[in-house]
Length: 514
Image (cartoon, rainbow, N blue to C red; front, side):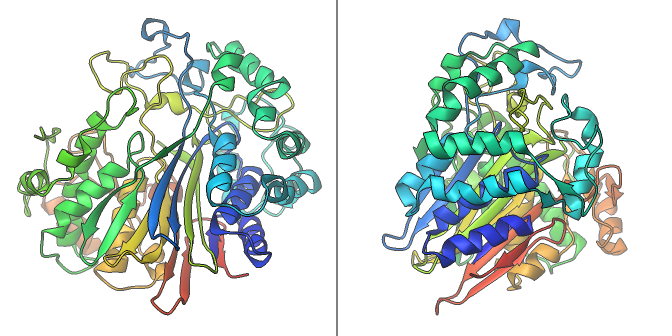
């Protein structure tokens, strides 16, 4: 089974599995297709993370496909906006794109088909054209002004729902990669065009930065929650926030689903988890987080004790242990029981909006994940990976067997979506589709006592109950759109091998079997 946010991509993934490909193969093929059909959310100018479950060994591995800052740019030279961040459309916001290398690294370790074969469907869709889906069209239109090129438009406007869109520039890039491997992207003409575009926008990237890029295989991190184990990629991904919050809630007796009492506890645990993540999540090669201490029972207990079941916290600080985003999530489980969970992203919708001439994709603004305070572990530095929002998830049972891959895309919504979906699956025993269909909340994680946004479908009694506990509640933030609340996919594998899947109604995709 496969699940993604676009029907084209799910079709491609299902075909790969039907032809004998692995879960990793299916995810590479789906990711490339999503770059074509959902270009505001992901692109070859972005990054990718993956979790993989090996059915033969029951081992979970984590692939970090995030890029680094230019090696010649110093902190004192970095552009800064009025909020003390790197401007979202400045060349300094562009870190080295990691997606292309991640495709080849994931395929080399866990694939069976060649990447050349896996890119063919995306090349065909880009060159022959595709019908733009409803949500993708709305996001395209809403973020059109961010684009600095007409390459991703139809005569200067966004394509409409159902309209056919061609991307010959991206088709040529994908063909070059299919024929020449990752070097075709990181060296030569494509790399030179990327560098030229970044430098024209005020950045300092060099062709050497691209040529030296490498992915990393990391040890995943996990916590026990009830009768399952929840897996995330380690920093520089923000999965730590979800694990901390789930671990805190694991020690509490939960109120009923859909109640203000449960939502309050979830919100308070997430605020504590985000407070720690904002400090500790950065490039582990520069400032490794004390993960064993952060996830220890003693530390979790001290953080859990700070949750007041009756009142919202107004000041949350990190402990001391011994946007509107553009992202896609997709997953697959193959016939052998291997599972792959993947997120790729441009960070903001269309990232920086910078389109290298003739390449048909935008460059991410992931550099905005850096802090510009030199005292902070996540401070900008040359050749460093920033705080990263994209986090694929995976669930195993306590006997080590696979339960399934899952994910909820959407910037700071991702840990929040992971927590809400996992609790629906585990505590309430609902299926994948119902877990994704349930209305969600979204908190502003970087603001003490920040607003709590609720989808329109959340009962009024919940909103009133949260307000009564001191939360600043906004119902149905139409100005943000539904993407505020994330878009997820889930595939669960039962003990007898039966697969159950779900795909978020907030996106354009579906779950499919070959």
